[in-house]
Length: 242
Length: 247
Figure 1 (cartoon, rainbow over the protein chains, first blue to last red):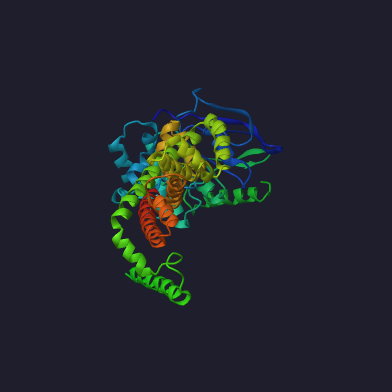
Figure 2 (figure 1 turned 45 degrees about the horizontal axis):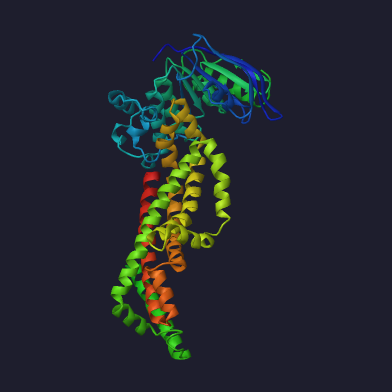
């Protein structure tokens, strides 16, 4: 993996006649977890898609720049709410989907190590249909890591999981993605408070930074600082000014 | 096992109704031959029936295979090329406005009285259902999967082969199931229009000579073949579905 860049985003998005967001401007610090929190429909997934180089529907005016000046193309891995595992491939083949789609050789040692790190060695031969929702997201996490990109974009990847599994996945992801420039898009204040080392609340009018809990994530769920941030974020979502 | 019992009961009831109608209405044998007479013909004309059935089976199987291959290839072409879509789609829609039955005489003129015209007929009748159902599946690839592929720097053809085609296999298999229903219709129509062999030809011949028992026997053979074909194609389609869903 190459050194992770910081990413600056500045722009507006129109969808037909409607302005999705206007003048949203922020910087994702290099090698840290940033969380973009916002209500549904505020365009936070569009921000993520724009950074991923996937054109969203609508017209984007603005620029996305990196601290090292190099384009993001090929340096970004994507993980979404849907695990997007291919039902006909087993865990090993799903983890190495990228190599399959590029026609490049598979690093078998690395694949097996990653499957081990997400705790699925005993299930490596299984197909997604035989796995639980949490296990499937762990395969998706291993597939994301297999890409070994300095930038990782997460689009509410844990929101469909039950509370306990979500908590475990958050810890695992925080641990395994440490050192990369991570953008997590979420609508859950608790998740943003727990994982964010840099937090942005996004509204149609722009993105505002909110001070995260001190130190490196994941922040303990029950620490007063985490709970305070969570409360503050919740108020912001409800439209109560800080 | 209970399915076999069901089929047996249905057969007995069906034959009973048939025989009942013969007893009750006493139609002349050339209008409605009794079941036993048809069975006798089935046995006595077995060589004739088998020879003609073989021709029809060949037409159906070759037409089916070619239609599925060509239909799938067309669907892939349409899915991969805007240009192909723009040029081919109107042609496909127009061709569907022509009943295949209506061009059967033309096919006989072009491809002769032999196997060729019947194979083309079968192929044409299943080509569109296969193309449209497979293309439908290919053009509705999950956006998330396409995003994932793009973020992985996948090439369009690898995305097609490793994601879009497998994701669209259930659509292809429903096209296959339809094709198995239509294929025998295509072959028999082709034989009606002009043939010197085949079950459709034999039926017309028997009909013209008032050998209704032979016509019934031909129909029975055709029905049994069609049922076997459906069963085989359904099994194949089930296997494809199981593969695609990882079951």
